[in-house]
Image 1 (tube, rainbow, N blue to C red):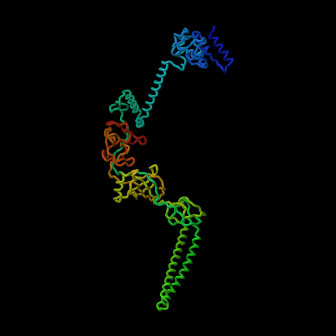
Image 2 (tube, rainbow, N blue to C red; image 1 turned 90 degrees about the vertical axis):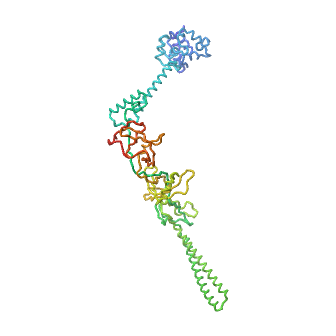
Image 3 (cartoon, one colour; image 1 turned 90 degrees about the horizontal axis):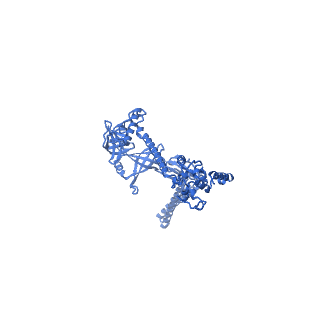
Length: 547
């Protein structure tokens, strides 16, 4: 009679003979025999079922060839093989948990009550039961709830009211924490009467006093540094370049020597023209002398009038020839001047485009060098057509409008000049108009084609009501501020803003100088809420500051 010990003995012998092939696995037939002997068997461990390719009792039953047992009987879930097992009625035939547990553990004393104990102590199979899945879901929910509580605790610790009250006493901090806890337990929304977290504590804020002063009306724009003159120096003669008399990048003045073309051919031509002029001048003098003699003879009727007229014509021809010779001489003198290349404007020379020894011609487009005028220099910028009327009003009145160029970060002023030119038409594509400002550029802070931020001072408002820009908020009611009353409660005040100058904003209506407005911490305020102004940590001074 087959026993569990004989089945395991056969498996051990097979493993000893073929360790790589079997690795201690039970065959499907042996596993099935163990199932039938389960009430008294010491079932295989998980390795036996896994190495045999089965992880569940259902896999063992369905894994035989042809889906049949060794006797050829058909096996299905709930089939005869389970009914033939005397203990199968006590099992859950839907999930086969005891069978699966037995296959995953070598030592299972019984399949009765001990099987349920082992099932609770050992890992579950991949097909876990429904109530186990529900227990895992409960663990996940518990874990997520724990994480959520931690996140809420971190947020409460990080909330800005903790940072605004860093210099408060430990007793005040304890009371704030108690108030926060009471607010959480109450579950209500925050109100002025303690309905929410920290509602019973005054909110720490920073305030500023409304002041009166001058508010400049400034138009900001983007601009490009544009030189007033950029000249490409080209030769006006054909010839070899014998010298270059400048250093790349140096500043030159108008008329300074830059380069020299070989002048000898033009000097020779000049001397030849001068000789021809002298010859024709001598002929002219002789012709004039002959004409005077002919006119005397004509008066004496010694010669005919035709001879006198012919001599007069010859004199005019020589006079014309002399003028032509003089023009030729002037041309050669001009060529000699062109052979000496000079700076047409004052400015900074760029990189040399041609080296000495090259033959240059008038058709060279690159030229010899480029000179850029640096002093003065201009900035061309654009502004919206909406600003044009304010600019034209000051322009027509003859007022000089100051223009300041700032660097790319718009933090450091580079040069101050004045508006010089307004373009004569608006760009219909962008709705902007071009303006040109002139700068002396004595410190060479502006460089051609440099990107700059422009600020054009159009006008100045005197006795303007001014608040920090951070105090002005915007909502459905428009612009508004929080006013700090004498009892340290806040009130919402609608305002009408005027020009803005960076960190300062002018108020056209709604505020009067001397009132206090909240500049920081307004995101946590409500109408009538109590506030406190904490001391600064650095110097112990009041956080209240005047604009």
